[in-house]
Figure 1 (cartoon, rainbow, N blue to C red):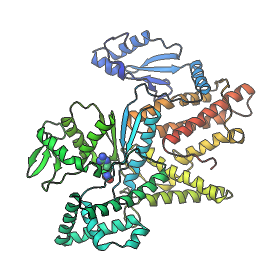
Figure 2: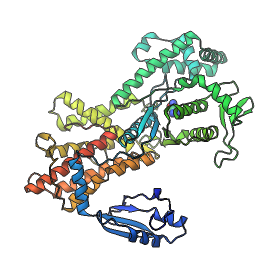
Figure 3: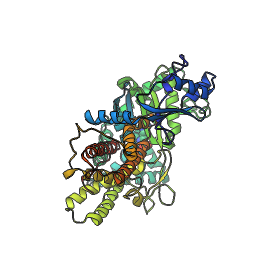
Figure 4: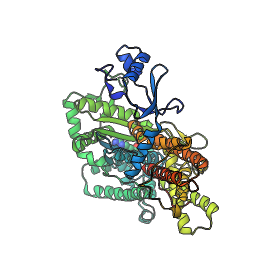
Length: 558
Ligand code: ARG
C-alpha cells in the first residue's frame, strides 16, 4: 500500500484470518476504505498493491476478490517452517506486543452487605478472561475491584445493626444477616417516616466520621470481603487492587470544586449538574454530580476513580466491565472527564454485557422468584458435574471425582458465559453447558484429555528435535488453525470479546478430530509418526493455554 499510495495511513491495513477458508487463509479488507479516502477505484488499487507485493516466500497465491479484498493462501513450506520454529523454540504461537499498554480492568465490583448475584458473575468471569488475555499479549494489566462499599444503604444498615442485630445469625451467615437487616429497615422506612429519619441521621454521622458508626461499617465491610474472597478463591481470580468507593470519599469535595470552578458543572435546583448541550446523544441527558442535600453520588465517585487511575497508574486504556444498564452512566462519566481533562489520551471503554435469562426467557431467578446467588450457583455447578462424572466413571476414587467435578462444573459455568457474544442475553441451561458435545467447556476439556491419551503414559513426548512433514489436508488445516492462535488473542483484546477465543478453541478441537480420524499417529511410519506426535503436542499446548486464558482448568482425566 505504501508503494502505491505513499501518503496512505497503513496502520489500519490488517491481515486477518479469512472468514471463508475456500477463498484463502488470510484476508485484508482495509484497502476498500483507503481507496474511498484517496478517491481510487478499490479493485484497481487492490490489483496494484498485489502487483507491488512480494510475499512469495509465504504465499502460494494472492488474489483480489470482490470489490477489493486481498486473499492470501499460505504455502505448505512456509506453514511447515513456522510450526517447526515454534516447536524448536518451546512452543508458542503468541508474540508479545511491540507496544505494551497499561490497561486497567475494573470488574466484578460487588456491593458490601449484599450477596454476589449472577449479574456479578458475568463481570467477574469476563473481566478475568480479558485480564489474562491482555497479560498474555504482553500488556501491563492492573485489575481493580471497585467494591460498592459506601453510600446511602449504610444508613439503613447501621440502624438495623444497632436495633435488630442477631449476633448468632451473623456468625452463621453474615451476608444473609446483613441482608435481613437491610430489608427489615428498608421495609419499615417505607411505612414510618421516623425510621427514614433515623437512617438519614446515621448516614450523616457515618459520613461525618463518627467512630462507632465507622467501626460498624468496617465490620460489615470485612464480613462482606471475606465472602467475596471465598468466591474469588473458588474461581481462581485475584485482583491487584480492591479500591472500593469509600477510598475516594475524601476526594469528592475537591472534584466537585474543580468541576464547578472550571465551569463544567452548574447549579440547578440546589443540585450540581453537568449539561452536555452540544453533545450528539447526551444533549438531553444531564448528569447529576451532587444532590441538593449536598451528597455526592456514583458519578462523582467514578470521576475521582478515573482521575486516580490515569494519574497514579498512567493508564492508557481503562475497561469497565458491567451490565448494559449502566451504559448511560459511563457515557456521562467519560464525557465529563473529557471536559475536565481534555489532554488525557487514555482510551475509556465500557465493556458491557447483556442479561442471563431463565428458561422462560425472563431474567434468571430461583424457583422461589429470588435472585440467584453466586455461591449457590457454583455449588450447583459442582454437584451436577459430580453426578455426571459418577455416572460415567463411578469406579474412580471419590476425591478424584470431586476434583474432576470441580474443574468441569466451574469450567462449564465460565465457558457458558464466555462463549456467548457478551452483548446478547443468553438462556442459562445446565444441560447444555455441561454437555460433552457442542461448544462447551466439558467438550474442550475432554478434547485435551484425548490428545493427552495418545501420548505414552499421558506424558508429553519430547518433540524438540522432531521434523515436521505435514502433507494430508487435515494436517494442514490443523496446522493453519494453530498458527492463528496469537491473532485470535489480538482480536479478543481489540474488541474485548473472549467468545472469539471460545469459537477458535472449538474449531481447533474439530480440526483435531478430523485429523485424528484421517491420520494414524502411533501406527504411522516413523517420519509421519514423529511429525504427527509433534502436531498433537502443539494442539495440546494451545488447547490448554487457550482454556487457561479463559480461567478454565483441565483435569488429567475425565
Ligand atoms: N458496584 C457496581 C454494581 O454492583 C459496579 C461498579 C462498576 N465499576 C465502576 N467503576 N462503576 O453495579
